[in-house]
Amino acid sequence: MAEHTILLVDPDLDYLEWATKHLSAEGIKILRCDVADKALQVIEKTHIDLVIADLKLEPFTGFELLGQIKVTSPSSIVILTAGFPSTTQIIESTQRGAHDVLRKESLSFELRHVVESALQTIDQRRDAGNNGDNTPRLEGKNTIIGVSRPLQEVMKVVGRVARSDAPVLVTGESGTGKELIAKSIHAFSPRHKKEMLVINCGAIPENLLESELFGHEKGSFTGASARRTGRFEDSHESTLFLDEIGDLPASVQVKLLRVLQDGSYSRVGSNETLHSDVRIVTATNKNLAAEVSAGRFREDLYYRLNVVEIELPPLRARQDDVPLLAEFFLDRIARRNGTARLRLSGEAIEHLQKHLWPGNVRELENTMARACALASSEVLLPSDIPIGKGPMSGPENIDEALSLLIETATRNGENALGFARDELVRFALDQSASDIKEAAKLLGVSLSTFKKWSSSVTDV
Image (tube, rainbow, N blue to C red; front, side, top):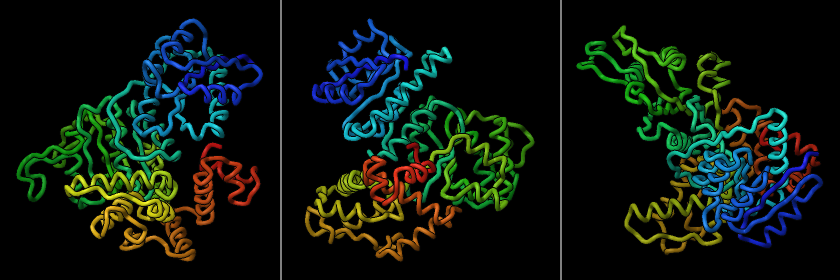
């Protein structure tokens, strides 16, 4: 094994001692610093393969250290750590060139695996003779709430894909926040200075949707009293988000395919060819592959849209995010109403985390709004939170839970048994903080079986 040099940078001396022991192995040389400026001096004098640095450093931050490393030693791989990295920090770190961003509390079972992966990348670069600097640039900002590992993985993909113009398809259940992901992609892209335009393909009648997208000429149809520009024309050099793309009529699918192929289109009632430089992001809660098989969606359009797919996890797979989201909604409701902010009791938080949230984040938001409206004190107890009330009610027992699971699998065009297994794997990983040994034990299966099951869900 070729020798690798790792530099640990962290103000916590106990952590430096632990990490040194944890990563010690044949062929690995470990250096340590507790401040950023000394770390930079080491990097300037010594070839460092891998830097593992905390975001909170002195006299400058881990972000700034990352930027300096990319200038001073562009071949060095950088892993950043933080207590609870925000989604903004994850995107910014990815765009600035970080290999990964890890939560401090997960390092005991995650750090070694990530480091081994990074060192393999270094070896592959050496074999290929590639030490170029691929540092992406930081643009925009993000407002998505969450610290769970599934959401962190999504935000890393957002950070990587935002800087390109590749079409992105955002999938996931209704209410998971697909439009927020689209906004994040745009906000961190070079097109962020222009407003992203949004159109819901399922909310506009078929006879008007083509005009809405591509515009029309005066007199082209009844009621067309003047020329009108469409969303493609208005979003030139920006991003166009097409929500519920699975509901796009066949007649419009053909015209959209042409735009994706060469950027050209015509207004309704015109033979003039126009061109638009637009980045397309789409979203759907349907299984588009199943729609293609059923003949309701063009296969060639599907592949044009699905260059990069981002699957947004349901809220039930993000239990760590439930309290943060609930607190966020309580803050927003208090500001909007000009009232005192209500607080969640510990029992209320447990109550919220036990719910499966079939309506996802949207259901949680509505639940907190109802709780605020009905609250009798400034501290919310489980009895004050009306979970399971309304059209997005959650299951009250195992029979209802199984019925919901089968219904969800059918709606997504998936096999119910496979879907149930994947959901159990996600749940076990979440409950065990991604410790695969504990997750396997939780499900009562062998480690090899769990790894086989989890291969379709996550990289383990």
